[in-house]
Image (cartoon, rainbow, N blue to C red; front, side, top):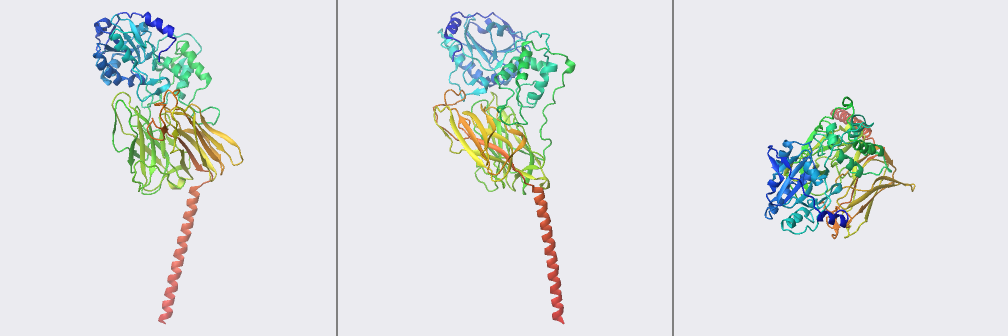
Length: 609
């Protein structure tokens, strides 16, 4: 879709700027002069970022465009802007994506400034006279806020380049690019806000856990250089509410894993960037967090990998993958901590581990297991973390159950492999006082009509005894709009337990209460969701479709997971009491047996006399 007013776009198209004949270096130091590279042909200039996830998604697309546009005598040129990258980064980007055209470094932003480039990826089409005929996105698949279509509906760069090559007017000369902000550094001002004193503590507590080596974020935020380099992107993501990812309304519930920023912290970041990112006193800077440990829960007692190394293609849609693992537990086994460890965080979108009874023959069947009817051992998404239960609480894996991994993979532009693992820390039965169960409210008959902008679905569960609510985990797909958990108490009172007013499929959280919430017997938990199947939903794959329940992202789900424990349960005492009773019974049986034997011997003696 064109951006700006029609008049402004028309003026821009009618009076195109002419780009200077710049020289930029390849990875090997060879200088590429723009006019010589074009050789009288039009050229598509695409700004890319080495660690920009959107730019990396377009690697295969750019390879394909180079081949297709070659027949129209249009060249491609990839440009990495900014002095934060070097020739090694240029070489790595070109190698990783197997680019069949030149990739150069624009360290001083001379070409980016001449074109007015603001993002990676952002594309420009220059005619043979180096006049700009198109600027904007490569296509419309990826949109702001991480929204993505299954496939593009318009290839803007390809269409514009072909029109320029044919000498025709460009039908859509300007579109809105989506991606990472190209940083343009300012001279730091003397100001009260500094990185060392004011900004690093915010990044440390709200960002660095993920933005460090070994974690899910695409780049690090551990040093002043890291923060200054990404300052413009940080401000935009914070202002939009995309980062740090957290989607619970602050009006309901208090959660121990809340990573959101308050208004004061947001203002501080924006003002620090506006002032030119002053560093402050380097001696006040805290050392970076260590690279992520292999396991957040500590060294697991047992580790179960999926049985094969799975290969993820560079693009396309990957069906959900199902892997069955036999843990070899011949007795009931208690788990106090569980963690999914993706083998490749770049491509594992989420992973659920369910339990299957030993005689199940359907590898995709779902079951409730254990006395409380637990439906899930652990659900992992980026940012959700491990399951670490309070002291005395544990989840039960019934004897001879199997582990059912369901993994959702998302291609990132290059071929990848993954072998995800599950780590468990076990708990002796004598230490388990309360069993934790994951309950699930779902709708197997979910049906969303075409074009429905606010399709409402609700399901309920009733507590048959006093329970403790520990956490909630809503799950929907691309048409998910909002999700809310409500409690309806036996005395007629109501309470919103969790409200997610703007659900985001890309970031799904387990909302862990600071303190367990006691729900008396008779309490009803009501989950209410809304879906947007209209054209107003930018993530909607097809607003004309009747959408039904299914595992692919283009299908939908209504999943309201929540963790509970029986409020007044004390399994350890019950077991101890049972053991004492069993011991008394055994003693009584032995005494009775001895008495019977003595009576028999006495009877034999009398008979012999």
